[in-house]
Image (cartoon, rainbow, N blue to C red; front, side, top):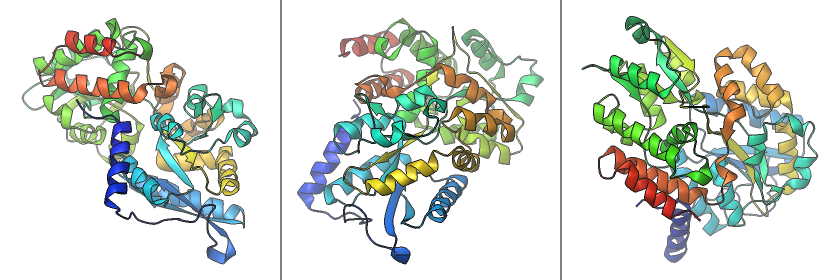
Length: 408
């Protein structure tokens, strides 16, 4: 069985301490260092890697530095996302941590439990119009009644489809699993798969499977139940029928988007991070709420800003206050093509990017992965189970019984 993130981080920490290796020093003095023009230096780490994401970070940092004269902020790329937590763990052993990090939102509880993040409750509760933030987004930065950061952006999963391929076969946009099943069958031929999703090991694959599990009626606390069983069966059957490739176990979300753009699949499960690539291509695509048995539900995706414990708290407060301004948040997310975590900013966002209307509509039914204390363990179980099912090693019934038996 694959290791959970917590086990991985502990392992990396132990190995680095034992080997006495040095990491890349960014800021070693707690509380920041004096830097450009006598300002106090602040450092932010992220795994943002696309051209537009990097541009958004450049604009965010430049805007903050221009807005005041006490701090000078720089940002560092420490990715990709699959490597980010390893690098953060290594930095912990050398006390070479940045002041702030942009984390995948389900990773927050892990670092809080390791006592690595600062309690920012006092500054967060004093922010203007806190009620404008999506409740599920605020839930992702809350732990034990305290706030440890601020939501940075939001997303969720949608159905993306090739309009021309569906029109050629006179197929309506799927609304239910049965619709999706029928469409995938009709759209599959020697040159195309009807449907594709990422089933790669880790959070990306689980994030996509979660939409199926939740939409089939299981909550996170009910994982391994009837809804989970139906979701695993659906994934298995699509694969066994050949309407979805077994290679999905090796495809990241961006890989799936590339295959869709190349015209090798007619429909895919994916998120708004692939919209820029789709827009740059000549593919005629549409976006719809992801098909469900009942109410379509999915996981809250996106990132949070967290403050490293013991660093320059005042400087980090200044940055959080700056980012919380609706115009700042709106401009940065427009550049990065991600939905702002504030509802008022999100409404303005739609005026420039109306295709995100489905993303916004689904926010009401999103679930935070941080809502269960054992998310890292459950994520590992779901990821491992999906892999074993798709390669034919286990049955949906077997893996669901295992998941139920491992519930806390």
